[in-house]
Length: 256
Image (cartoon, rainbow, N blue to C red; front, side):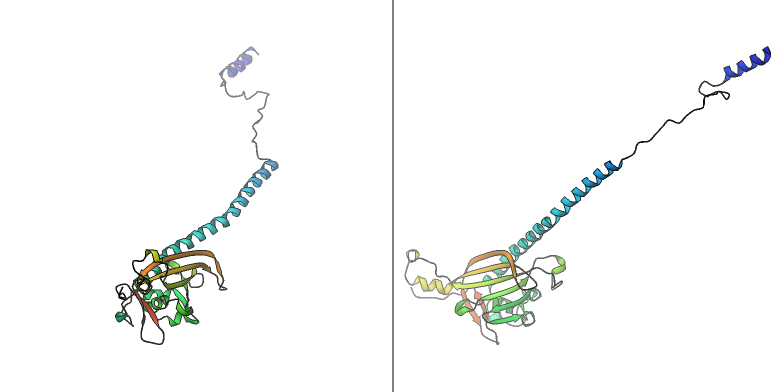
């Protein structure tokens, strides 16, 4: 009995300190646990996300409207000076005619219609850029008021050269050309200067309104460009339609 007892004690002494003795009577228990989200916490998180999404969706249309209005203002701001300078520059009467100039022929892809007095010229009737310029330069005397419906010249690439005509941005342009008669008598060197100014100086006004909606109504956008044009405004003789062009280098001589 003494030998067996000593052998058992030696086995206990040789057992690793970190391992439980195989004959130990105390089993190990896993006491670890993991924490999770409760349903209340999930509901609060979903509520916060939903509130943020509603706020973003509510602001998005206002931002898109501001971007659209700014884009339209930029187009009119660039097209206005272009038409102003095109009308002011005019062209010599002797060189006006079919095939004499093609620098403005691209306008046939953008001008939908021009109304002069009671006559309306649709896109199919506007054969050249010179015809468009000649109609836009018609003087306002005798009720010949000029109104044109135009698609943006400087819009996005998908709306250029006649593309995407359904949704393209459109505006109306009213052209008013009248002889200059705003000079006061005190500023004139001679009474005969008044008719000289009326025959050689004109007031040019371009009134823009936009956008033109599909039903023909016009939105709230408004812009006006004004300039003084020196030279004569002469009709181009020929054809069924009378075209007018400024002659910047031609003046009426009057004896003062």
